[in-house]
Image (cartoon, rainbow, N blue to C red; front, side):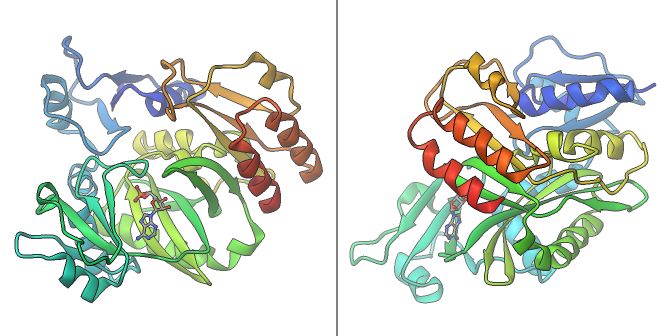
Length: 354
Ligand code: AMP
């Protein structure tokens, strides 16, 4: 059988490997800076855990393999401007935006996009990095190093941040998980809850949006669509052409996790609509040490990535998917006592969304 190679060797690749075992698939992750080049066979399949990477010997080798999946889509999603142009061309709802070329001024941006304008780097920005607000003050200017390197977006006053995880296979079959509500802290995902009754009415719109994108691109694998919810409408914030942090709850709360779904799609194993077990919660462990006491909490399913501890770095996550919401709340309240103070609000947010 062909091997699957993942460009990137972070936690997403590791969790793809973990999901591969019951399918008897062989998944190898590849560090983008590796100097030992992998020995790829012609029939192997190459997928990714990230959408932009530096040109190194190993990324050049993987990305030019004939079975490197989604080559064209990855080019688009690595550049916010191309991504925005694609969403425009498909008439998919997203925040009003403007390219920031050499002749653009802050004044013109405010004129078209409003008082508050968010500059976002075209590439390399993630977890809220690579962003700059222009607040509409007299002295507003677009910093020189941002010209040609960013897009500008209007401020969206959203009710909630939500995401949809879907998958498509080579026959064009698509499956979706229920919409997920996401809470961010300093631009970084802190918690997710799914499914949520109040989001059900937007599920079919969301699925149509993501399937039109995946079908247009003839995409294969899992794709995540991050949106702003404003009333009953969804506006796409960004697309991740890969498994996504806001889908980690599926490891506990769905019959097929997003990691297994991605592998099924790329290895031509039948896709199936995932059966959702319970109301699930995922909490990211940011910049903290591993604590064995988490395992003593009923229902806690801990994933620890074994990375060096750095402030606000994603180091692991904890899933809960218990049949009884009051037991989930009880467990979350126990967890609260073992986490930094800023988790208290996040845990209250999770409990209020159960
Ligand atoms: P991003 O890196 O694009 O996911 O943005 C990080 C966070 O910045 C998002 O999760 C939002 O909380 C916020 N954000 C991004 N774009 C906008 C926008 N146009 N209006 C308001 N908040 C935004």
